Image 1 (cartoon, protein in one colour):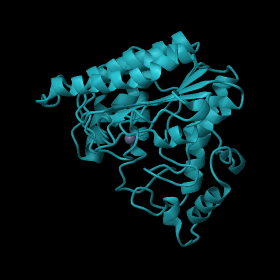
Image 2: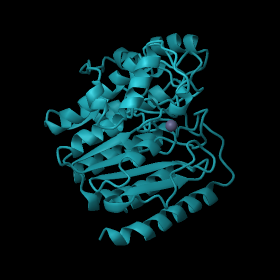
Image 3: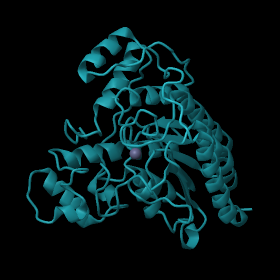
Image 4: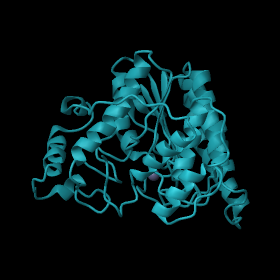
Amino acid sequence: MYNLGDSHPFSPKRIQMLIELLQEWNLYKEPLQPKPISPQELKTIHDEKYINIVEEVSSGTKINGVDLFGLGTSDNPIFEGMAEGARYQAGGTLLGAQLLIENKANKVLQFGGGFHHAHKNMAAGFCVYNDISIAIKEMTNKGWHVAYLDIDVHHGDGVQEMFYSDGQVMTISVHETGEFLFPGSGWIHELGSGMGRHLKLNVPLEPFSEGDSYLYVLNKVIEPALNWFKPNALIVQAGADAHFSDPLADNLLTTFDYEKIFKKIIELADTNCNGKVLFTFGGGYSPTATPRVWALLYLIMNNMKIPEHLPENWRTRWQQLLEKPIPETLHDELHAYEQIQRKEEIYSTNKDVVRRLMDSVAQHWF
Ligand SMILES: [Zn+2]
């Protein structure tokens, strides 16, 4: 299990809560069980030396200087079974990519993954192996063009870096500005290099950005970008940490916004790449919001009716375990957070960022 410890915010409880919620509703379909990825497959993205170090420290070997590889830090503590857990996570995302490539599925939800901060030879931001990049590579090796869309509140730096000069991969990250948030990158001038130039898009949003800004970015950046690039598939990192209750970031999405965002992304996949889309999870550190956001994604992907009321059993059990109140409904309460003062100013600053980004890239597309 990919478990960074009881006090670490990246908790496997989030997935357990989601599965139990879907089970209570009788809507849970047993997922395919992935195999852990092999060291050979990891080498498509990671350096052999890094892979060996991850494997060794994970089995208890003490090695000096592992912090140079981002390991043994507060973000990435070394835990027993770390390598195996990370290989299972990457195996799941790789399996998702293979299902799309082999035409065995059109829409895939990986119940995990989304480790977008992992670098070629360094762990970062709770991420050890970059499962998303491995999945993208599997597709580009088959000659596919891939669009990667990252709505996690943090910049998808690891994935962007791996494909910065790759003309087969478009990356689009919408995040809270790096001025205030880890990893501090993801600026509009990061546009890619060489063959990948003008294919790497970043929309750094003001802290306290709301759903209107996200929908604006979807309509004004993501939609035209995909209409032009026409990828063979879309891979989406659907981190839930842009939710207003997330303790690690400031943006203010509600479940109503997430519902609109997920529906729009699926519509864009249907229009631009024959519906081929692979979603992974990612960040999401509010234990009471994250399972609800991902349950919405599951229901929308499966064209299921959205049950509004959360099962009483589930709520009672998890309220006791978490010692936190859980809303009675899948959706947030209306007006669940206090209205912010600078609402209009934030929206207008974000629109300006979008305008400046599109001014510098769109002329190269059409
Ligand atoms: Zn995040």
